[in-house]
Image 1 (cartoon, each protein chain N blue to C red):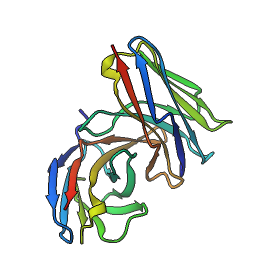
Image 2: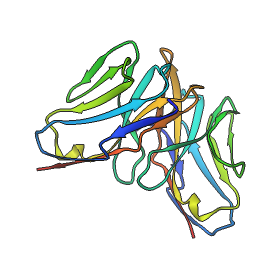
Image 3: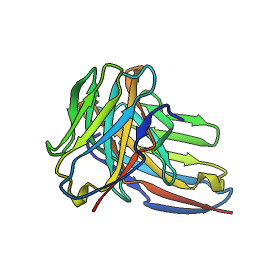
Length: 112
Length: 114
């Protein structure tokens, strides 16, 4: 929490390729790392999250990995489809646990 | 669909005016948070309400205020609107499960200040 850096800011892939988005966080006490997908004109939608007691979590074509030592976590999307095109945000809780600190977002474009 | 509903969806106000935005939280969630999302940026935390009390606040001036009602719905009020207040305002209702708090967002209210 407190500071979350996200890279890259834009990502363009061909349909069927994989996409990886990476985030780093500053608060070593953070224990929860959600990922949100935001489509144009909509609010952020929680797509997957990971707790600090596991290193990887998978849900169909999306997976998240966590490296607590290095304080970074990543979103992996395999077999990308045009409907995966959106802005993706990573987040981590602030020190008080009352809010999420968001990265600046990654605009993913999947072309067919 | 998250079950979090916000109204209105769009709003245009004049600089100096006041605005009230509304949010109905998801059933069973007793915590509501408000975020401001400027164009091309991630959401920024404004404040959180838990059981009708403010439970945390981000770096926003006092002219941003809120309320939470007994049914856990919430309002965000902004006084003396400035041009820089133009943004998407997001409401998130939360539940704590397994020691972590999951947040679910509404579709947002697009506020334009002219």
